[in-house]
Image (cartoon, rainbow, N blue to C red):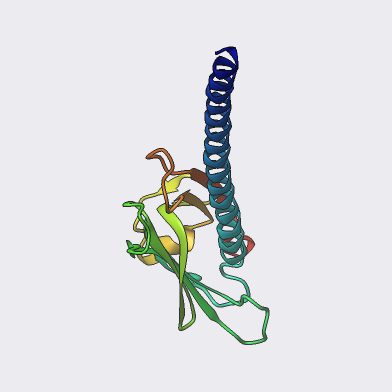
Length: 187
């Protein structure tokens, strides 16, 4: 009888130990997925910010005035000689497109970048994208900036929000970028 109780007790303890190990495994998997999702979102934000900074800092470089063609809240088009090729004028345009159908995130939109005639969709789970324009005294210009007012733009503030395409615990991992960019050639 005592042997049966020992065997029964060991099965109960073994079951409890297995449940504990499985619970720890599930928690580790969940936290790993959450960390990887946050890391990917932050990495994509940094990569996209670097692309935006590279382009916007070159606005007006080695091209005739006016350097900025479109200055709207969610769209910017400017001219620059991006690669310092003699006599070349590149047209660069950024804007926020339609909802991204391949993502489960209902706020995920496609960011597009035109370079001359090549259109590239940046599918980095962009949920917010906005430009704000400032003059030489750092006074905000009301968007859309049109006509001769485009020549008074001296700096551009970029707002960028990214979220993960897949949720964890019904939440999306998010990252935010905001920077005031002062292109030298608009001064």
